[in-house]
Length: 309
Length: 287
Image 1: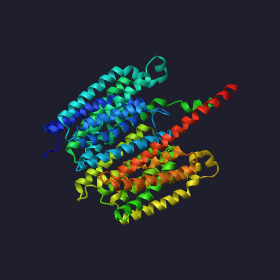
Image 2: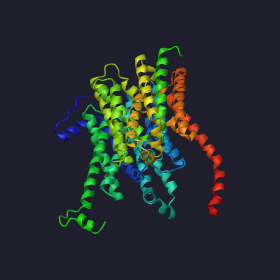
Image 3: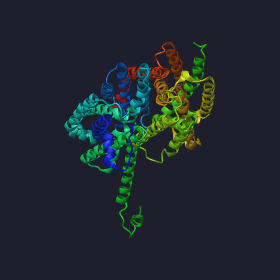
Image 4: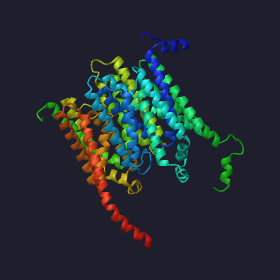
């Protein structure tokens, strides 16, 4: 490949678009980032980030199995992710819906076991399909090479359906996310809405996995959305910002991967993490300014101290 | 089967590593630190590939990175407020760094040994040489001794940190020490089942034991025994059916142990739940 990065940005983009595989990667990346940005925002609001991660890991044996059987990997990703979403939503819910650090230890042990088992199953399919070592890396860590026209069609249909359902579901979903008790009292079928959202999350995780790989879905599904929640509290603006950040991270990641010897998985995680850290730092500074408005005299702390605290 | 040297090496290293993972996993589950174990597995991948990229033995990177990060997590815990989004993003970025080192390694250093990445990700217990197996077993034995020495105060500190601290148990010292042991365990276990699957070897036997008994010392012994059983059965199954990789068979048996134990606990609760309800309800009405 005789491509060179130079300071002429127009020339760089022309070089990028002159390859069919790169064009396909950008098309697929655009679809996936749009869906991931929108679904990811609601996922972060609902604190279901580890459910998204688990679903993506469940997609890995699906994709590896599909490759072994000679099917399209997209079939495996979407099939296993959606099936996993249905199973997770059918499980009885105890304790907190998400399992963070130091949470309900038994539930996190179950999640850890399921994740490790999914990865081991994927490894089984990979080793059954011999001569597949490079494919393993692209399934786990993403790739920009080898996205077919057919795959883009599948992604487009899945992505459009996903966004349509999300728009239809938007209002009751947001309501039951922000205040589940009141929503239930008002007659919103919160349980059904939750299941429908998990299926959407399965589709989004399955699609994102095809760009970032199963292990790195956080880069597109969580990082832009988490950054958006730190920048604005308004849901509509948050969704828009999250989609924009996801698109930016994907396009830049794909372009950097094209011009550098380092793979897309490294670039999207680094860009996503950087965006998240910058947004968190901005929020911290903005909060500090809001909490301590610059009033030089008299110092407020002295006044409250003299009030007998 | 037992006369083959590679099986002997696998059993030697595997038994010691499984026992260590089961015992350490018991405390990991008890203390609710499964996600710290998950984090360490990601770090193990990046560390091993960083060492490979630098031209070192991957074990140097494994132990250095996991122990350093484990102590770092322990020192930060309680001071910084870390939610799941921050941890998840950091974990993904650590793996992304691992991919970076992988690209560096395959571009500049790969000299025929192109399976190194798969070995780090998914382990190769049948590929351990005699010297490596003995070394891994010796390190595991040492860690088991340390873990058993601190087991009693650690259990006390895990179940009731405030009372333990009041009784003079050095709770502040035990936390980082224990996580350092978990870090070393992660480095050991990733040689057997790989960086991606080691969380399962930590969590599954311990969680299964936790379902089967309420008594902590019995659960500790049971977790170790279940982990060793998963390792032995897994190695035997992988030997009997060569198409199945040992990592898959070991993890499948461990997951099956957990599923069976959860089922047993569920059945037991079903049987006891009605009687408990009928005895508690009248008392709550009268009081």
